[in-house]
Length: 330
Image 1 (cartoon, rainbow, N blue to C red):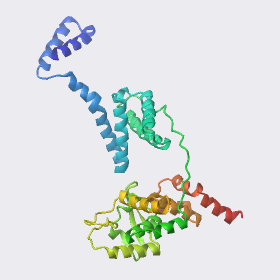
Image 2 (image 1 turned 90 degrees about the horizontal axis):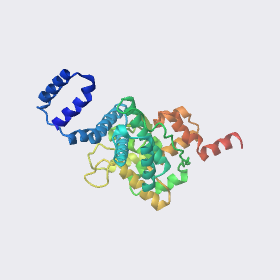
Image 3 (image 1 turned 60 degrees about the vertical axis):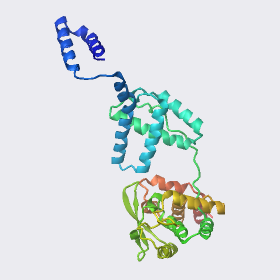
């Protein structure tokens, strides 16, 4: 391999050097490369396999410094790895058509929605644009792939009747307390699972909420009903786990996101109501806007960084429009 490398170098340098210089270069190469073991296979592995993985790790580290949540980082990691494995090229060689073909076959084979594909497009574009800015690649292959047109779906809030039906079908005091606190705090499910008993202030009927998404703390408030059922649930516990909500069975571990989702899904199936945690958050925003909360007040309370996100629930919900019609027109 050394001989082949020396020969290639000499051939490339021949037009630029005279015979004496060529002889000197050959001698230097022979002496220098004698202590190294060169293999073409090793070079290929570094460039085609480890190369993009190393770039991806650096990209994820950068996103982590930008306060990206671990959940989002995991989604970036999975999406980009699937794309790179599917395309099967070096990062530097990927073209716009490669990405288009991958996205088309991915959607066809997996039957995913346009909304999900647009999320993938966002992940790909973020990765390639960063790689371009950092000069790992010459240009972003995503620049000619526009944002996909996603059909707008109505964000339907729970009605007061639906929330009452769900409460009446809660099997345990824990589940009832969970439903109450999900609504009155408008917390994300990832925020609820992180709350500890020490974060509850029953005298002030408040709870300290930490957002892993924004890396900020905020205060949520408890209704009298939520405070009552939460206190009743905590008094019934015999474990010493600091978590606010735990599993029903020993060793009474902190209740996770999947556990809350499964509980609501099961209650929803028994009642015929589409029940999931985030719907409580949207329901609170809708109800708060209908009852006179200002947009900025709701935004601060629920922890939205962009008022446009809050406005989705305020302006695009039939309940809000009907309430304003009855108050201002009828």
